[in-house]
Image 1 (cartoon, rainbow, N blue to C red):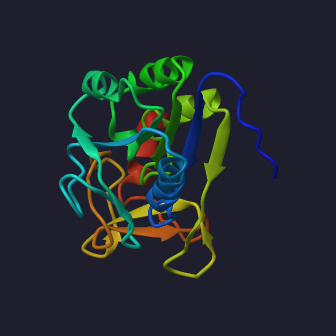
Image 2: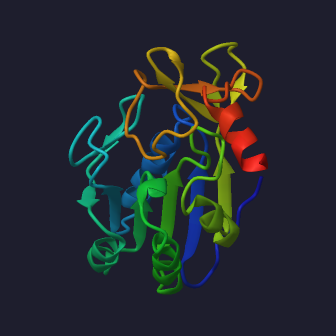
Length: 203
């Protein structure tokens, strides 16, 4: 696939997919290339994501890059000024104004690279990702390897004591391999209370 970036101004790229699909690693790769090209680069991460490191963005494979942890979209925008390339990791954890902030940065001339989960553990659209996808010039949906069958995985399974988490559980719960698995469509299991919730909604 040939990609031709805009000749003037900025643009938005979104890297999405399930956990363990290499989203952070791909974003780090792109930002490293921008640094090699002499561009001013910054990468932001939500402050709540301290699984591997409080400051760095770290992929499950061990790739890392110095990041700026932020607590809000407003802080992100303020600290992004003057940079040519702006990375946003785990973008699904940011509040919805991250969409307008990303567009504002792109319209101001920055290349914005956002990476995150496109679905939550219920297989529902996650946070601001759907709208970011609709505005992006470039979109990459990555696949992981299904922990059950070894096939291409596009969903994330949350586990509690080794069993599918309740459908009614909290949407945001930061964790890694001890709580989550990548699953394909066939191997993904609904939460234990999904059927009851569905029957209640239908009534």
